[in-house]
Image (cartoon, rainbow, N blue to C red; front, side, top):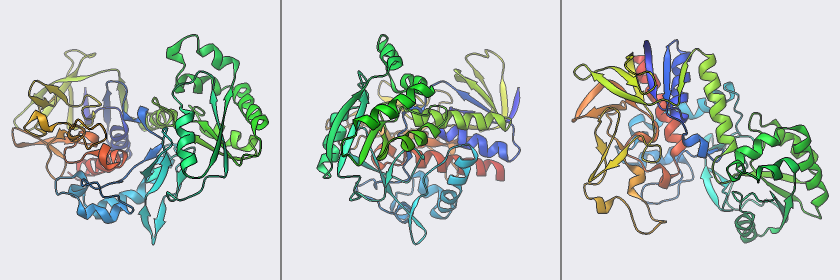
Length: 420
């Protein structure tokens, strides 16, 4: 089987890259092993929240020039990233994913702030329509808040959220919902997760029952907070609930899996396939064949000896968290192609005992040139590109740049393939 481009990984960077290439007439294949970072997404996209030294960033584009030269953003360049930033809302809208307009100052993007499941605030560049994005840390949410959860749902910690809001001057009260179909989920603990609840909340009688119960619970509150467990297939349910509830209503993320993230992944995958792309789910790439500094083909675990050939390959299977790279005694390796990786030479430098400190292992990745082509034995592999968190040079967890790096490198890699 032959394709123009084969992409390894099924997450945000893979799908954005694949859709871009399909739009330009390429025939693409995505090989996806399973879960990806979108399933853990908050519903918000971070571009750059902190510099590597910890400095807080308010205007991401202005801060890119302060990044090290080996950072993915430095390789792409501020001018291209600025152009991509302007494209992104329209790109996602065309895939059925509506975003809040970005906050700007003199047409320069500024970070907003999303409310985390711990009740704290984190910088964010863009957010899906059903995820609240504050303009500043000082923005008031309301004087009195009603925080509502489902009985037995432990992935939405109402006490943490209340403590976070109370520190910001909002008086909080917590109430519990009881919905028969959700109560039935409690019989199987594996079903009592955000996605399981979202499935039963897709039934009109259930989300209407939530709206009616919340309406009766309100006693002088001007703010209602619910968990993000609505709209697995369509976020319009959150709009309907807002119409039913006579107070400002916010939906705050739960512990993973993420309902908005899974919805986004499904929409992107559907768009990719609608444009003619092929998506191999639950499969793993292996057995690459090299012809000098060129990849000729790969195989997959499910397809056996059948070679998959392409003019170009994109590796976007994630970092240590996504198993795109892994640890073997004394070193870090990229398991599919055996590519060069970047990490401290001494294992003692891989992590810090302080849980809240910058953790170097979160920045491990594959070495690339300025075009995001992979290196193997110090030599450039001419038709193998790397995108997303697998690219070395940034610690997206510490920087708050995970989604931004995924999107920007995906578009950059696609454009480099198309310009070849």
